[in-house]
Length: 427
Image (tube, rainbow, N blue to C red; front, side, top):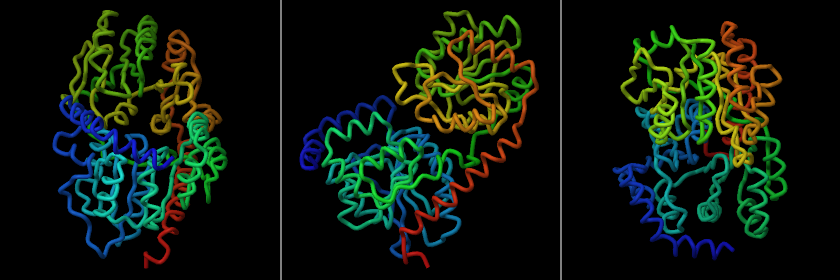
């Protein structure tokens, strides 16, 4: 099966090249760095006397979850340098913003899992340890890493029931791939069970990395924007997916009957959809604005669409309630849910739909402390937000303290387990 996979990654290479070129023209790839997807880069490698760790995550969520681990390792071990790879343009931007002035960390877009690209990448960076994040399973990379006897970890591993069933179709291939990991740290109890069924060695479960607090180098809101938010009753719909925006708009119309000065913030999971959402809002005759990078708001704005990364936490500070998206779409029930922890840290009351499979244990944890509630439709959501507006915003200080302590415990043990695999390389 590995031979077939390797053949396909060679046979399909021309199609991949065309896709990347088209995406670059459409602005979905970095025009200056798209060749990194073919393992071509002018970036200098680290000095030979340094230990190099390589972390790879696909997109924003995976990358953000590993920032605290990376920072702790960099702080505690001056001999270590780090390469971080990602897939999406947005995640690349976040990494660049976070580590712009850090000479010990380099970012690259991960190349296609073609054996020739894989060898070129590994020959350049020569990692002493590799950590794949979440569900980033790339067979050619994994096989070549194993051949070179490089310690390999899967951290915050997420193997859903759906993913597990797919791997079960090719049991011998699955065994070869998953037995290559020296350490697997599951993100949930479900993932732990599925990894065990896949015969993974050395599986641990300490909790989800997303519990770990991390102060990102976020953009700042302008004074005019802050003053506008302070005189409004603000609630936020975060990480929304198609059809959920309509539910939020209908909720806004209901809330408006009670509170004329309500401001609804909509932050779509994919910001390239804001223009479509803008047109939907206009059909409901709502004063709508796209914030973008100008960071200014007209005084009559009712719906504010966020078209920029790095601002969400700033808006949480002024939001009374938050609806977390990707939770009301039945078709996504096996991959539903978005991370509600940051909104909780800002004292927001969290509302979500029934489909939160990807963050089931986190929601269960927060529900225990009474800061989240499941809703079913726009009427249900508007009713809850109106009720919450009647009460002053709570800071949840004791709850946040417990969440942060839980995060610290997870961070410490995960960092220790990763460094243990370096054996005698750290003095």
